[in-house]
Length: 231
Image (cartoon, rainbow, N blue to C red; front, side, top):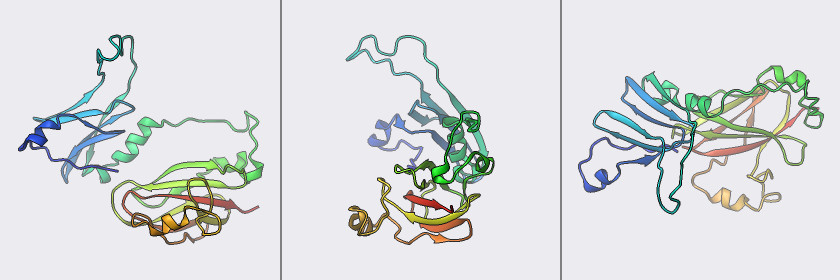
């Protein structure tokens, strides 16, 4: 999720919030321009009197008087951008800092993904790509039973939207599933009734469209899809 906070300190509780936690990024912007401070694991931030601060090290003396002693390596980045943090691409820049691109030669390692239909020749194209700004593909993995692929997405901008995922693979079917990768149906998932009653969840079925699918997203919603590839 995303939390917006005022810059003023008019009240005692405003003044008490001298530092706040923020994973991956903090942004200070208006409609025309902004600056994001990206981090890969240092989460204490403060903004006051025209500056943005990032706490790099706490070094408490209790309960461990020797805490945090020694050499530390850390990464942070200042990211100026036009517009607000949504249009400025802060979410994607923070992902790039936290999850840098790693190239893995599947052919050289002798990897074989034949059970899911994903071979080395298919990896030259983008397997799955979000067509919607603010909808992030969080994870792509083989299903636990090895038969299908799991694609997990979330809405990062705090708005309801119609989303779409396209793929370079040939798809045979897409169903929404729970976090244990069971299709969200009364017969297969004990979580179905709770999911159906949740006001924070979208309950539409993924609509197939070519080699992809469309679906609704509520603000900050997480949805997980089980994708069956054409054999």
